[in-house]
Length: 87
Image 1 (spheres, rainbow, N blue to C red):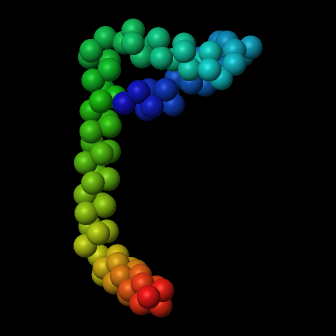
Image 2 (image 1 turned 180 degrees about the vertical axis):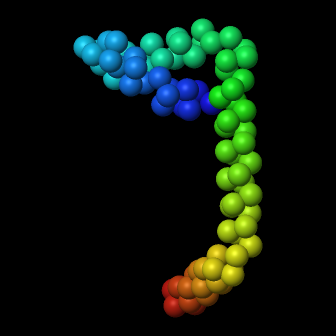
């Protein structure tokens, strides 16, 4: 959630403080995040939770895909071959 917020406000903070170093802008953005009320912060938390759920579902689909299963199978075969050749 914080990274989403940071990405949204970073450029505007940089334009207000053009002389500020990267870490100084980070401090300002961090303080702005801490100053948000719970309702404002919840918006970013909700966006994060939605994106996380979508990512987890896509990852699950990928892990069940024939391409990933083939990749796993090939890696196991390669590792067995390496072990057998080293013994």
